[in-house]
Length: 280
Image (cartoon, rainbow, N blue to C red; front, side, top):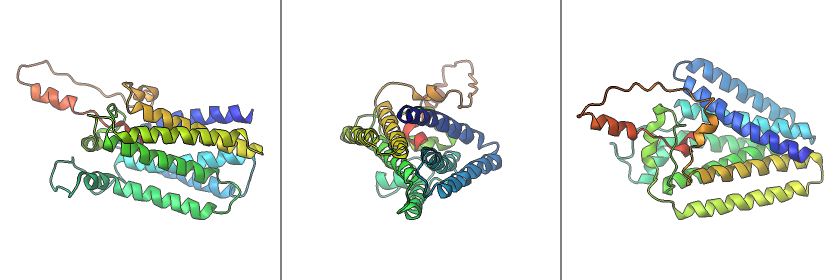
């Protein structure tokens, strides 16, 4: 029962949390203060949850730590998608000033966000080191590793790494990703996700306590979802349909077609955004 409950909880949490972050990010341009107050309040609740369950080994403590880690992650994702915490470079790859390499240019677009995530992970590792309940730390670490893997895939090449999930304010990020090929890294990362999922599933199946069963099952389910998200990068599917309820409906004002507006139509077709950046 614990096993099945954890699968359901993790799946719903993934779907709902992603949708709420997208909704907050899209509302950020109009209600920035309110959105940041909500996101920060959720993050503080997450910190409180991690502190409260630091040395508890019950099933409920595993769930609380799991959701607490999601709360911290949601704060980082919201600040990124709103555009508050991204990087010093906020222009397309070919625009001046040019960087010394494409990799450096891409990294500079997300530098501050990545450093903040790494700092949070290190803080959690320091705080939870030696604690009985490591669910929160492992959840945050798993999402961080899967995020890095996804970003490398869209940087090195993933044919269908495009989506309308990224806000227009970050549309310049699409110029840093390759969709003309699928790189060899994809197959390495996909195999890594599968191996990790198998290892976590085995840990859940052989857990000695209910707390450990819940912890490892939650992590295994998230690893499976990460595997699914990696597949979205190369399959011609529109994953944003899963969160249509959270995405603001964009009003498309179409002017009557004319013979000399081909440039405008071309610019519209170029407004697709990167899926992995929206998750990142």
